[in-house]
Structures are given as structure tokens and as C-alpha cells.
Length: 69
Image (cartoon, rainbow, N blue to C red):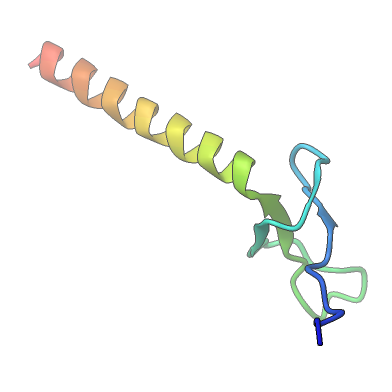
């Protein structure tokens, strides 16, 4: 018998793509009642793009620091 449970499609809070592959990232935003934190759902594509941007910024910062010394 095949399971009827399928992954839940969610909308990425960054790019608005609908996907089942992603993760919830903690947010410092509070919900209206202020009781629990609202988490952001981010798809895997946006996570990879953000990681690549971070790596490029770090490399550029190290290059500037080395050339200034």
C-alpha cells in the first residue's frame, strides 16, 4: 500500500516560489499576540543563492584587506 502522505507545498517568503524543499529559519519577528516567534520558510534555491553571496562577500573583503596591507 502506498502512503497518501505527501510533502506539504509551502510558499518561499523570499521569492514566492511554491516548493516542498526548504526549511524554516528563525525570525526575530513576533506574531500579533507576541507569544511565539514567526519563522520564515525559505526554499533551497534561495538558501544556495544567499550562501554564494556570503562567500563572495567574504572573499572580496579578504582581498581588500590583503591588498591594503
